[in-house]
Length: 150
Image (cartoon, rainbow, N blue to C red):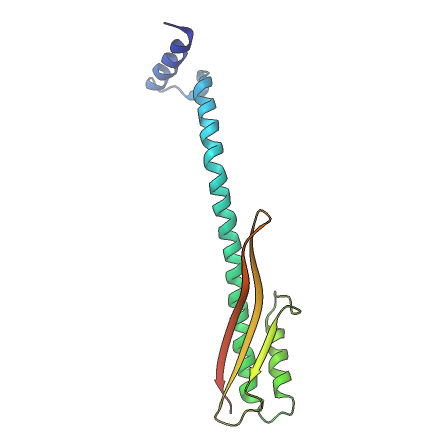
C-alpha cells in the first residue's frame, strides 16, 4: 500500500472502532472539511445579515405605522383647534421614537376638516437595505391612517 492510501485506510479503520478524529491525523479530510466550511459559511452569513436588515426595516415600518395612528387620533379630536394640522404632525413625529425626525415626512388631509369627515395622516420614511456595505434596495416606507373627526 502506498503511504497516501495507508493514511486514508487508518482514518477509516479508527472511525469504525469508535475513536475520535483527534486521535489520528487525517490531513486530507481536515483540509476538505475546511474548504467545505468556507464554501458554506459565506452564504450563511449573507443570509443572516439579510435577516437582520429585514428586521430593522420591519421595525421602522411598525414604528411608522404606530406614529401615523397616533397622528390620526390627535387630528380626529383637534378639529376645533386653530393649529390642528400642526398638532397632528407634531404628535406623529413625537411618537416615531427611533426614527430620524428630519427624514420623516407627515401630511394631514383634508385641511380644514369638519365633524364626521375622514381625516387622513400619511407618514413617509426612507429606508435602505445594506448588506456588507452594499445597498441592495432602497425606497420609502409609507403608512397611512384615517380617522373620523369628532
